[in-house]
Length: 73
Image (cartoon, rainbow, N blue to C red; front, side, top):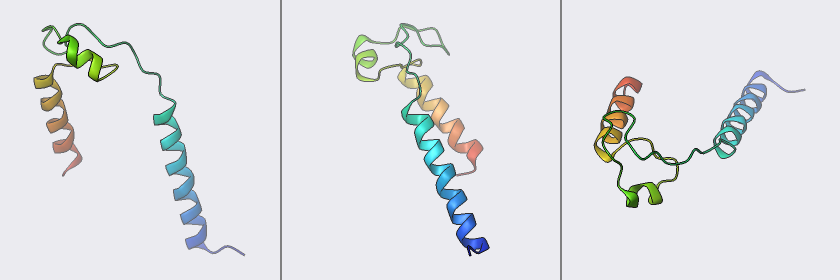
């Protein structure tokens, strides 16, 4: 018979597997020509390097810093 720790571990593994599956099967959009934040053109090299890019480098850096800050890291 499974105890509480075994059931919690199984649940954790199921959640992790589901999260990974969602990321792997996530639809990827075509790269944007203009940044969705500041409306500046996104260079062709960046659009080719990162499929589905929607922000210029500067706006992406700001977005990532804000995301890290709000996560509490």
